[in-house]
Length: 306
Image 1 (cartoon, rainbow, N blue to C red):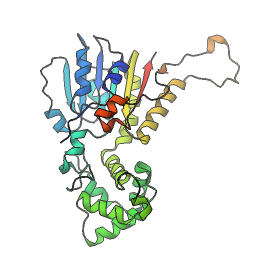
Image 2: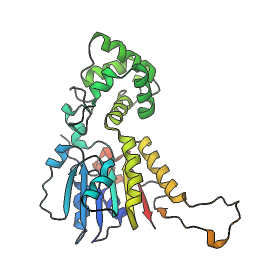
Image 3: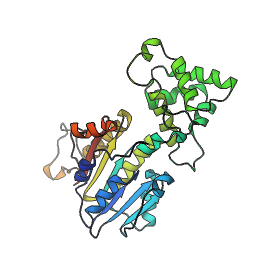
Image 4: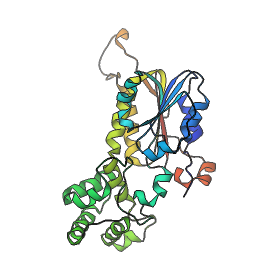
């Protein structure tokens, strides 16, 4: 199993601009790499770390009085923090996506590299899993998922072949799904660099875990909870996530901007409540890429309430 290495660790911690007495949230605990670095900079401050994967919570040894571990989806941060008496925060960090241990545990069904049961749930207590998506979703719904969340150009052919296959018997394992995907693609696609099942597996995983809607919700809630000078730092790993972060940050920054063609008095000009710190996303250094190949697709964006 590959050890989990926190991506863009120094850049993320620096980006949070941590106050020693602040209230911080790590929405994606994983194996605790980012959380532990935040804690090092807190004296009277407190850190709330969320993860909906119970195995991630269980793997953490926490002997620190100012560190709270909460098993929940980060989309529920606002409600869960209100239960803790917290309505305002100084910073939020999100390291979105599947952690290395999840990918490397074949029985979780996240990876096309291991043959195991279709699952892909980050929260093992939820009902919806990859098996249900693959075997129960109508053909048109599968096409929509593959297009929307995987940007898979051969979505109709793959969905059609999945439906044909499951009429004979349920599609139960990752390798069975990989074989169907490969049989649906032209030879020129199979010869291309990269695994042919990557986009479909990504799409199913996003659907199972409701990842994009969760991201939209947490960014909306956190921006309202953020104190003046507080920051949101997001590390994303594919274009769909990064697009949501980029567009949300721009919308927050531009909220009070007026059409320059409209004549107004100087005292009517409203300053923006937010400032985007990263005009271009921060990416991994050469040194980090040598240590961790999975950092290659990572993009970090920062916004601050001013």
